[in-house]
Image (tube, rainbow, N blue to C red):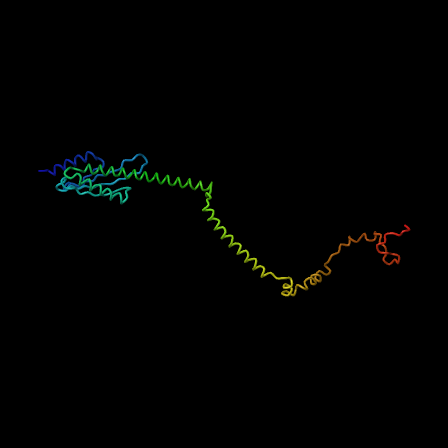
Length: 241
């Protein structure tokens, strides 16, 4: 007959020896304890961690122990679901044998795999961002490569825009032509225009200045007297001279 109590006590002693810093006894009857499992990682790498709680049933190891995740760090809900499925598989495979060490080892391997996936995702994200930056720089220095397709697309848009501009300009010119008045129309609309020059001269009146210095040398000029009966306009001299 199997002594379940003895097997359970022996396993507890072994577990306490294997996990001295992460093994904690919660109760003796029934035996309940926790083991904290932390992923292996190198310096500066993010770690993932969870605490598993186990409770022996009366006929353990012939019957499955109770187990649950009591706490976790840096794990997604999907990761926890995968771990619980893994524990269920391992329990069924190891019924009849003490199995806590086997279960913890399987979970540790799973956590290390999760860390590797996280590292891979970070590296892929880094490469993606670097590629985006390279594409931006390439575009800044080289612009968009012209192909027949994108040229035709650009030209179609350009033609539409230029047609709209021409229509708008033509409409503005037509409107300006309609609003422009002829000289006759201006005079008919504003009767002050026909007297504006006269009014300007009247207002100028005595304010018009004459530069008399322009006429100071008039007496020195050898001019014929128009009153002389012998004076002929344009006559420079006689034949006798």
